[in-house]
Amino acid sequence: MRVTLLSYTKNAEHLCAAAANSCYSGRGASELIEETDERKVENRLLTPLKAGHHSVIEHASFTFSIEGVSRALTHQLVRHRLASYSQQSQRYVGMKNANYVMPDSIANDEEASQRYQKLMDLIWEEYRYLSDKLPLEDARYVLPNACTTNITVTMNARELWHFFELRCCNRTQWELRNVADEMLRQVREVSPVIFSKAGPPCLSRGRCPEGNMSCGHPRIELKFSGQDAASESSAPEKD
Ligand SMILES: Cc1cc2nc3c(=O)[nH]c(=O)nc-3n(C[C@H](O)[C@H](O)[C@H](O)COP(=O)(O)OP(=O)(O)OC[C@H]3O[C@@H](n4cnc5c(N)ncnc54)[C@H](O)[C@@H]3O)c2cc1C
Image 1 (cartoon, rainbow, N blue to C red):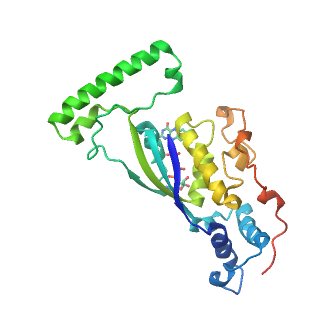
Image 2 (image 1 turned 120 degrees about the horizontal axis):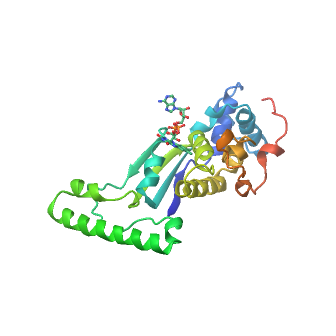
Image 3 (image 1 turned 45 degrees about the horizontal axis):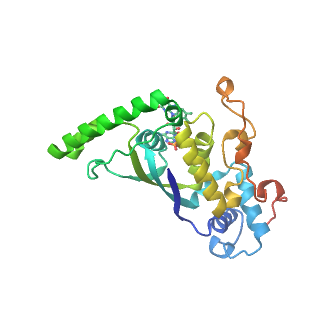
């Protein structure tokens, strides 16, 4: 599995802060974006965020390349509709090599892993036979959920917040959770103010909404380790 933040809004925090502040200022965002006082920028961003006015962070977007993950993962990922996707096509790209994900639970069980590998070998043997003879778009019907794929995804910061709440949660399957954790780590590096409080609800909201389904283990390991902008910010300044 490889996750790469390919591209992102470079001045995301200044941009979103200026957009937020333009709602309450006589000045326009073209002027407000020139603000050089970082504390002001933080406050202008965190005040609406704390109030739940998350539309201001929709102005920032982030594009990732997610590679070598299973089709089982991407099937779950693309359920997130407020995003843009480009996925490797099994109609145009032949899958001649047996590239598949093996879950740890299977890898750690000798008999299960042998049976799994045997099945994958058989699947690929038949896939090669079919794809030599027939269109790839038909041969691919025998490929498993485990088959690896690459996908490019773009989300804005608001959708990422939502995605992290659902997919950094222990209730999400390990493979997508690992990808979501890595995405969170990478966006925090470039936009720490926007994402310092992002994560599963046990972190972002300080409580779990899962009721009886709760895992009971807040993911404190995901706590932002940089300067905690949200808790250090002072009262909102008037423009
Ligand atoms: C632990 C877990 C288990 C799951 N199990 C299943 C399962 O068994 N079966 C299954 O089918 N899915 C399952 N899902 C997928 C889940 O139901 C959602 O489809 C997926 O998480 C995307 O979430 P979303 O719709 O909130 O997000 P997005 O599509 O990213 O949308 C973001 C937000 O935009 C708004 N929105 C988007 N589209 C609309 C719309 N058409 N109308 C109104 N508001 C909209 C909503 O507020 C939504 O929360 C599971 C998800 C998780 C995290």
